[in-house]
Length: 503
Image (cartoon, rainbow, N blue to C red; front, side, top):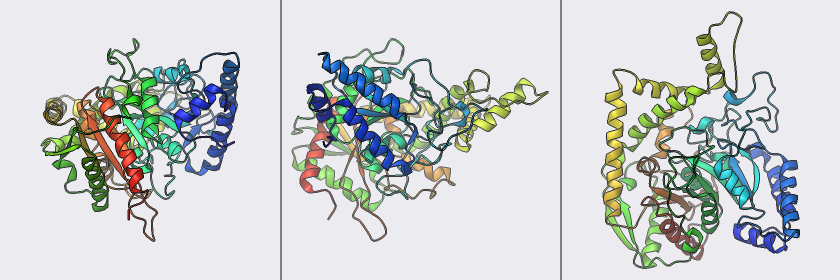
C-alpha cells in the first residue's frame, strides 16, 4: 500500500482505518534507513516509534476519536526536550563524559529531560508519532548545519551542499520525504533559511504564538518553535496543533489561535503585498532575484496589489542581531558548567573554576565559544552602553520599520536567502560570510513578526548542479499567521500551474 505524503491524507486515512499508523511508521523508517547518509538524525528508535503507532491503532479500534495529526510522523529538532529520547542540542556538552559515542544514534548517552516540551506534548495529544531527534547546528548557532558536534547534514537536493541551519536536520528529513513534517526553532532564520534551501515550507510564528517551554534557549527574546512541511496546508495544520497560550511560558500570548488551514483556501484579490527595496539590493544572486520576482508577478496577476516601499533600518539587522543574540547566548549558556548536567572535566587538585573552564572548553564547539565570548564582551562593564544598549535602540527602529510597512500593506514579500544552497565547507572558515546568509531573515526575528518561506520555482539546472531550490519569504504583522497562509497557499497553487522547473 502506498503511503500519502500529504499530512491531511495520512491523518484522515488513519482516522477512518484505511491505513494503520504502523504502516505509516514502517514506511517512514524504511525511508530513513535509505537516507542514512544525510546524517539528519541524531537519535531514532524504531522500537519506540512502532510501539506508539500500535498504541494509536489500538485506540482507533476501541472507537476513540483520533486527533488532527493521527499517525503523522514528525521529526523533532534536538533542542526540544523529549521524555523518550535524549536531548543534546547537537553538543558534546550534553553527553556523558564516560560514555562512548556510537556511530549510529550518536546521542544515545545524552542528557534525558524529565519532561516533554509543550510543543511535543501537544503533538502527542494531536495523535502525531514523534519520529526521532534531528541534527542541528550546536545550540542552534549556525546557518549551514556544519557546526554540529556530530557532523554536517547534507541537502537531499544535492548531497554536496548544505541544507541550511540551524534546523538543517529537520529540514532534510522533510525534503527527503522521510517525514511529512518536522519541528525546528527559529532565532534569526533557522526555520525559514533551511526551508528555502531545501525546497519545502517553513514557518516562524509570531513571538509568543507558540510556547518555548522545553526549548533549550539560545536567545530568549528571539527563539520561536515552528513547523517544516512539504506543503502549506500541512504546515498550517501543525501550527494550529502547537499554538496557544501555555501557563509554563510567561512569554506565550493569551490570544485565540487562528484557523490557519482554513485560510489556505482564500483568494488574495485586493490584498496589498509590499516589496521592500532593501531586500533586493547588493548581494542578491541574480537567479534568486528572478525566481522571487516571478512569484511576486504571479501574485499580482492573481489579484494582489504590489506596493514598493522602503524599510531603511534593514541594513542594521545583522549587526543588531549579533550583539543581542550573543548577549543572550552568553547568559543562557552559563548554566552549562559541568556541575548540574552534561559533560564534566576535572583533574586531581583542580579548583572549581578550573573544572568549569575545562568542562566548557571540552563541551562547546568553536562557533558556540565565539558567540559566548562576543556576548560576554558586549555585556561587560564599559561596553554595555556602546553595544548592547545601542543594539536595543536599533531593534526598536527595525520594529518601527515593520509597523510603518504594515500600515500600508498586508504582507511583505522578499527572498528568503540571498543565494541558493552553497557547497559544504565553502563558508565554514569565514564566520562573517556565514552570518550574511541570514540577512533577509534576521529583521523579522528582531521585530517579533510572523514569517514563512514557501518554495519558488527552482534555479535552472546546469551541467555542474541540479535545479536548486529558492525560497519566497512572506512576512506579516504579529499574530497575522492566517494572512501568510492565505498568500502562501495561493502562490503554491500558482507555482504548480507554472510548472516545476524554470524554463
